[in-house]
Amino acid sequence: MRPLNATIAACPPSGIRKFFDIAAEMDDVISLGVGEPDFVTPWRVREAGIYALEHGYTTYTSNAGLPRLRELICADLAARYGADYDPGDECLITTGVSEGLDLALRVLLNAGDEVIVPEPCYVAYEPCVRFAGGVPVPVPTRGEDGFAVDAEVVRAAVTPRTKAVLLGSPANPTGAVQPRAVLEALVRLAEEHDLYLVSDEIYDRLTYTGAHTCLGTLPGARERTVVLGGFSKAHAMTGWRVGWICAPAAVAELCVRVHQYTMLCAPHVSQLAAVEALEHADADVAGMVADYDRRRRVFVKGLREIGLDCPEPGGAFYAFPSIRSSGLDSATFAERLLHEEHVAVVPGDVFGPSGQGHVRCSYATALPKLEEALVRMDRFLRRL
Amino acid sequence: MRQILELLERDAQLSHDTIATMTGLPVAQVSAAIAGWEASGAIRRYKAVVDWDAVDPDPTRETVTAFIDVSVAPARGVGFDDVATRIARFDEVRSVYLVSGSQDLRCTVTGPTIRAVSDFVSQKLSTIDRVRSTATHFVLKTYKRDGDAFDRPAEDHRLPVTP
Image 1 (spheres, rainbow over the protein chains, first blue to last red):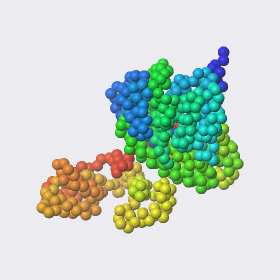
Image 2: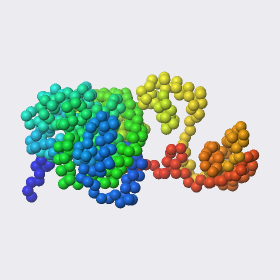
Image 3: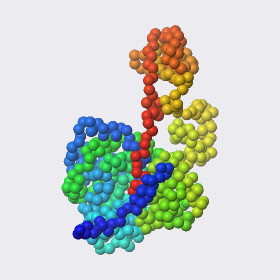
């Protein structure tokens, strides 16, 4: 047979897969490896989805998505962050941020364009840049700095081919929230070198130590920023696959163009459920956020008490402790912890070389399980 | 501080240490606040939420629950208070509310058998002065009580490791 697409064939499978296969075999495993909420979608939102099915909302919507949903998203961003996006031509509904990221990169990049990606970062960033014909240029961040991005390190990576910077804040896997000053420095850098900024803000509502900054609201950022968001995390709606892009009209219009040919529209039922989520589920979200924060405090304190150095995670639902004191590399640590104590964590280097020496622990798990996981991890560490 | 009470209302077994970590308050302050509420009666007591339907059936220990709507002739000066208080004093009565609508008091009554509850209603409740009528609704199945749903426990449908 003739060779398949070289770019895709050269892209390694996600390092997470191996741990999934092992963990799936065990029946008493406590998994801290799950990148989604342990809450079920709030009932009122599920009920709205059921109502939509019962009443036959099983058709396509317009390509950009339900006007009501786009209005609600733009109004919500305005109320929460002071953002100013026109639901008519600056907002579209995607099947999750995953599609949004793919659309944004395809629209921004020409073949060979470079995208600076601070790492450790979400596993899809670099592959998606490649799939869009671009070249990912990872730049390191450090646990000692709380994984804050150093704009000077980014600057040093800029070349004439650099087209964009791709950043997630709050971040998977580190839980890091980029300080406003860092974001402002990146915007200035983007202005100097005429770069686009792709801002993955899927965890925007899951911040615990300060208010979230929407990148598109910073002075000078709006015209060059693509903001990606969605309902998966804060509204516990991962399986509904519904997210959004807010971007200047010229970018949004091209995103709709790709979307109309590749996806057509996000699922109608999911869009109607998302309308309910924005109209009536704030109290549900607040309750879940409060729960995450309590677990975060207990879990991070517990990690430190068993001797693991853990940068304070200000957002998302991940802790990213250093496991260097164990003398093991991330993959060995995770593999042995899983085999010996049946606790699943994800090795940090899966998310980029700067993740080496760390493991990702999700605290989207009931408190008694987190406490049991800490007991097992403590036992594991003492045995080493 | 209110947060402490909300946490305890959901899980009274949380240690003061854990509550302190969750709220960011010093342990001593958490303990002092809880002791204060216990002393003042703001925290009445701690109890378990039992789903009796999930306990092995023991016919000698069955409990029957009924909602009793009671129509009362109010009296000058006391309204419904004296009758309501009088009803509430019976151990069989688990709750008493004054409610709007066609009836006046809504009570929850428990007993070992339907007969026992019926007898209580006809002999004790109905015979109280100014009680005009009662309507008894026996509970057939409990789906949710005080915020706790009693259907099958939620399953975790998530894959064990996801990005």
